[in-house]
Length: 312
Ligand code: FUB
Image 1 (cartoon, rainbow, N blue to C red):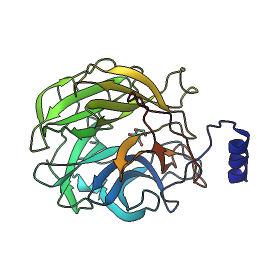
Image 2 (image 1 turned 135 degrees about the vertical axis):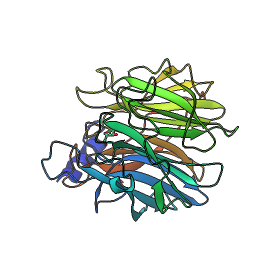
Image 3 (image 1 turned 180 degrees about the horizontal axis):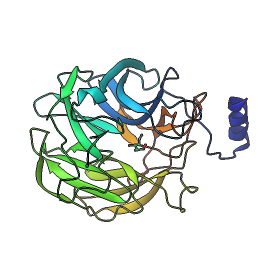
Image 4 (image 1 turned 180 degrees about the vertical axis):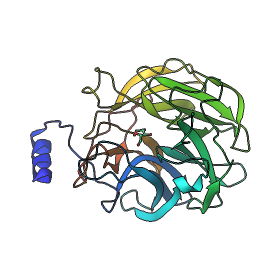
């Protein structure tokens, strides 16, 4: 009945926040996607929602890797990283992202609860292939509350490699966006942690990429200019320098059926996509989310058109 209602809304041209995209899987609930293209394959790294029906908190213990060669059909390669991979941590396998190092290895940056004074931290795992096996790369957090100028909440890392090989990491939440250069070893910060400027209404979930020499930062915002209270939309900013200053450009995805959202924007086989999550799968909810993928289009001036949430 929900699908029929959604189809009717599309036919009538009525926008509806609960309109769901097609989940990449309905076997489990997934959230917080990050995307990486390696050769012919699109990898999507996700969190894993395990809250019971009606649950009111996140229950997240591991991260999965999905692969696809057509951006439509995805294979779950399994839970390739979990809280137990980090002996110093103990809970909350929140948003994460994978980036390739200059050494050809794959570095998986995760938000994770250290079960200590630092609460949320950013940890790093490393593996020889996009699907692992992965192991803790440091033996402790890369970013914790003891990191100078660290964010109010150390979550949601996005890691970006520039054309000159320099790698940058952005992270943060609760209006605290932070950025830093990473060293070539991918496991230490180079220089100081900065607070980038111009990222209007930043809430969480940054995703950085580059197109035609322009840097883009998409992120979740939850201001009344774009979403109902407690819901997020995805805004974005652009810059000519990887550490900013940034210029806010608008909303690229309206709110979805889950309160949170988390974008990954990537070009694959000549088509741009946004991977994000909603509550659209059967039995879904704010803590039982589903990763979905839709096409994304740029205007001639480099601005992004709003992503249309599809049902297929
Ligand atoms: O999934 C847990 C947290 O909710 C993530 O770290 C945020 O991006 C939000 O999606």
